[in-house]
Length: 256
Ligand SMILES: C[S@@+](CC[C@H](N)C(=O)[O-])C[C@H]1O[C@@H](n2cnc3c(N)ncnc32)[C@H](O)[C@@H]1O
Image (cartoon, rainbow, N blue to C red; front, side, top):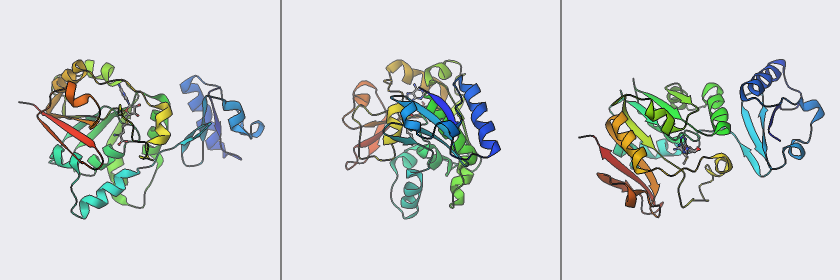
């Protein structure tokens, strides 16, 4: 059963927030008082738990919550002078409007936003549980590293499948379109991605999708794939960069 509840002994505001979320999602609200062992009610489904400072999705094998995870490590590495393939191939000036078509937990969007002075990012996430957790995280999470908070304030997230969204966009509406679909060859050692896997949308990015991304981008489209995935065999890009060690590749299509 999928439902919304709170953590134990909730404050009034938590109950109100949980009831509002249940209404928004068309799900039942269950008072936590009568449901101390959540997982026995969840079965093979999941539930939303409104905690005092975040929303967590709990399921049989774990929980999904927002955290900027790899954004911090990658920014630290960049500051140490190490190359970040995504940031290098974006070549940001700082005023770009970027569409992140596959937002996930938003680690890469936060990293990109860390390089935008006046620019902004619009993120799209098709999975409702991921969207709900991350929307709340962007609103309420505060990090000790101030650049993360500033970066998060430059991001807006919508619950859309990118195909639907792109079809409504005018030509060249965004400077850059970024797409990082779930790999065909998952990297299970990527611990930050594991909680997301049961909820993620696994649609293949097609030629037609990429044509739409090119139409909507003014400067470039950046696609991400695992070296063993079929993405860059199927889709022609102008340049591929990435790490031999991690086998993560970024393909760049420049608008002529
Ligand atoms: C690999 S993750 C993205 C990770 C992200 N770059 C980050 O740094 O956290 C891919 C995400 O895109 C979402 N997704 C897949 N296909 C989508 C689609 N057609 N429209 C919108 N979101 C999609 C998945 O649900 C998943 O959350």
